[in-house]
Image (cartoon, rainbow, N blue to C red; front, side, top):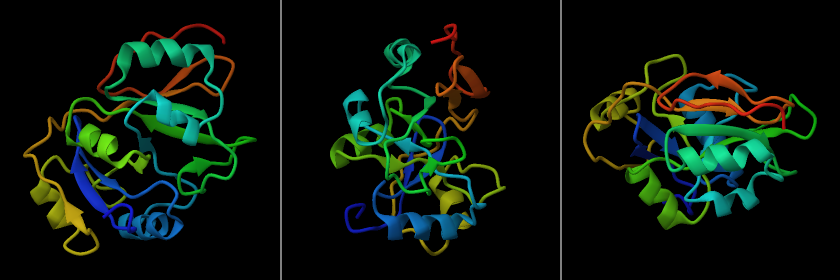
Length: 189
């Protein structure tokens, strides 16, 4: 379904997410429209393992290695330098060169999906922009009675906190969103 450009809803270890293949521009545009996403707010991604970073991110700063070792798989999203040419639906080009947000999800259907796909998929929460994230498949269906091609249901997610987001693109790592993962940040890179 993802290879064919479909939108898939799937449970993570935090909430339900909506996924499309990271390099399918039409699927990314469809997802953007489905969610009613504001311009200039790119989607984050999930990957199966650290090795897949080579497809989306530039060289890792030193702090990334320790955070990845400690918290992946898990609810930690890292903002990294984007590889050139990534879609503006997944890369922010506010800063020179661009940035991309990515994580390896904790044990969940999301991690299994990422492993089976072998490519990055979007990890935006399964809700219209501005609404509460969905913690059940029923909530996803109520939010999106149309527009989702496949809904993977493994029951309710914990639904407490979203992933923690850490920006590693500056001189000093910084937490952009406190979430389900507690991190100790190293000093300047």
